[in-house]
Amino acid sequence: VRPEGGAAAVIIGNEVLSAKVRDANGPVLIQRLRDQGIPLRSVEIIPDEVDIIAEAVNRARQRARWVFTSGGIGPTHDDVTVQSVARALGRPVIRLPEMVALLSQNHPEGASEAALRLANAPEGAHLIAAEGMWFPALAVDELYMLPGVPALFRVQLDAVLATLPSFRIFLRTLYVTLRETEFAERLDAVDAAFPEVAIGSYPAFDRALDYRVKITFEGAEDAPVLAALRRFADQLPPDTIVREE
Amino acid sequence: VRPEGGAAAVIIGNEVLSAKVRDANGPVLIQRLRDQGIPLRSVEIIPDEVDIIAEAVNRARQRARWVFTSGGIGPTHDDVTVQSVARALGRPVIRLPEMVALLSQNHPEGASEAALRLANAPEGAHLIAAEGMWFPALAVDELYMLPGVPALFRVQLDAVLATLPSFRIFLRTLYVTLRETEFAERLDAVDAAFPEVAIGSYPAFDRALDYRVKITFEGAEDAPVLAALRRFADQLPPDTIVREE
Image 1: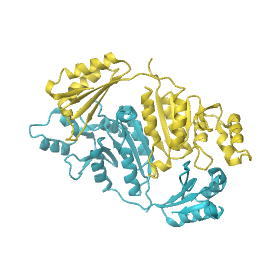
Image 2: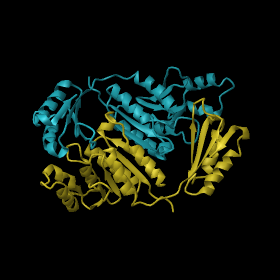
Image 3: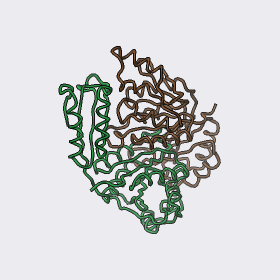
Image 4: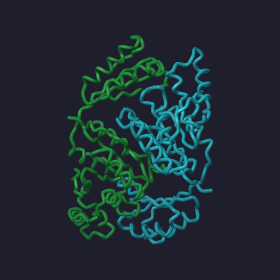
């Protein structure tokens, strides 16, 4: 099975762009998607502005099947994710009855108007229960609106990922002592010959290492990945290959 | 002086999106720009694909005066930043004579065709010398194409930032024990009354802390920043304010 569509992420974060906090959610999302074999097409970090978020969400939906947003969920003026996603989808913001019920349970004294803002959602939204947290993840179609607070983001992300399929990725790595300029043309030719294999070349510039460049080959099936690596490695002087992994 | 235009970043990185390496350059750029008072409008992490990079570069140029790219500089097939930026600008790729001269100095045995690819640049490009590195930063107009290797990125970024102006940012922070739902409407009103002040509200969800929410006020001048903070703080019960910073 191929991971058609893949994922894209939109990090809504004035606080990240202004260096008040370092984004922890993007790296977690990147690693979890990789662990599940879902390719990630893009990550955009943008300000808390409705027009910009709506555009970024639409771009992400064009690029990928599964879209994740981080941040902008809450009751204050800078929490504009719900209205931005609604605008992107061309749907009204409604008050989600299941969420109103949850808010009422959690505010036995009566939920204030500000608290009830947490029940706002794009029309057609649904909730995904997150273990150990009364506050569920908010989804609409295959778009998941997760909170920016890292501890909450992680719990809700796990709940969402449990509903998505897993895929295998085959990765093989070659470490060489050559410089990139010494093999660039040969690697170009292998890249052109194996369109289903993603090939990356990463120079290290660290003299403490035993190699100069790490070359990665990966794809959804092992045979072409291995064939591409062999095709390339067989063209190199054997003493320039440090190891394969 | 106001930091008109600000900056935007495009991180070119299959290796980041596929979790092979954690992006170090975005966080460094975010912090250095903040230190220099240059507002950052967006950070996009995208694959090594010409069309996608060209679109992201154009988007960044519409959003910001100064645009930084990270990665995709080198001699291999996945180094497509120069051709992507050229496409975004509608300019041809030329071979930059100053860079050919530098490459010849650094390859006394004669620079190979692969090495000479490093001299490719969008027409109209210029070089910015980076201290302690023979390889200069490549710029075209106010767009800076920095290498993805973090040690090289940092040195070239410092060289570029030394050519840009600095601005002051005034930040004041209020820590409160209230929940966001208990002050959201009042903060909304202050936000609407002070359009020149950026206000953020960040709940903590950590019981070890002495506050529940951190509220930030910032802008290019201190008087409206302080006035916005006072307008808001004066509406709160005094015993709910932990401290101001």
